[in-house]
Length: 239
Length: 245
Image (tube, rainbow over all chains, first blue to last red):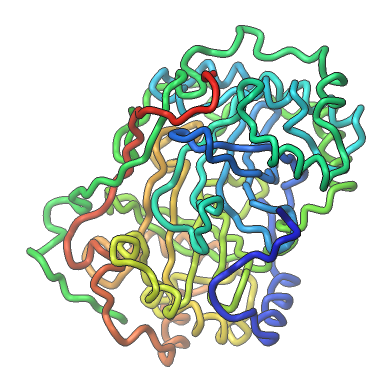
């Protein structure tokens, strides 16, 4: 996936723009960004269509021991497209969520134990310490850019995404592509992770959209309280 | 099942921290440090710009928030931004905004354009700032941004007290010079105070900046219709390859 060129609309960045941005980057602070410490590779599928699967590169920071927030890119290089976000919570935090919220969240047990979720370049023994924790967590993933259907721009509505939960879901060609590029074997890592355990209370029945699909729909609403609009055609003013 | 304009369900009060949770263990810190050293994190290194501005919920324009964008440029016509609720290291990731040039915007279908907002007003009014960067250096970039359009999805409604990112994603719109698009004065003052800047002075120095000439009928949809958009997440049949879960 990271060998094919990425089609981004527009002209290549001008040298003057790039230089300006390099200057500003040197001056400014990047507090929240500097906290991003790890890269995880996994797959997501659309909550209304398991057959549409996307390689997802997570760049995560911890807010605390029980909560991570991740940026999702379609590839891990500087041209990676920011396609979504994922939040990860401990089992304890997940159980405090209202029941209406739980279906948005997916379990990580299968992804971790199967080896499909991994940390590129991080030595096995260290990686497995993190994987053992992630195994018990739940994630909420929203994608904004449907790159798998060829969109060159982030069109349409946000999509709730789900994660793999059993053998036979992941498309073989996607799996082999990752294994080849990272020179690794899911099966070998699965063996290494056999000892890991999922959530203490078992995967919650409402997680993973309670086994159903989820779709997003747009609805028009009155956006302003009384006194905002003055009928149709409010004048547009540019100051 | 859930909507961006409906109140999220209740959670235990906890100790008030957002998000709740135990403090980082030493073990986790070591894992993170190791990962940080050996992994390249290239997409993150491509973030070259911090922007502070304001955004408004499309489904309820009484709710305005200060936002911090960390932007990476993929082409002369396209920026992608991760959006946080502050510039501190413990800032919450609250969404994503994409920014495109006028000419790319013009290629979009009308139904898509309705989800995008213009940036001309917030730049010329002095709301959009790059903290720490002298105005003179920012100028060329500001002229560029003033002609762009943004699409901003919010995934964590921290301002209404959500301890965790709950519910459906919400569409956001940009400040404008009319009605509910005007940012509250006390919010601007608090922001200016923090960065030792003055919105009024910035607006004056940006007087020459040109905004799009033609009024697009679909962007900033609320301005002509007084309508915003909410997002509903509904149960549906899932196309599957195996049973789930």
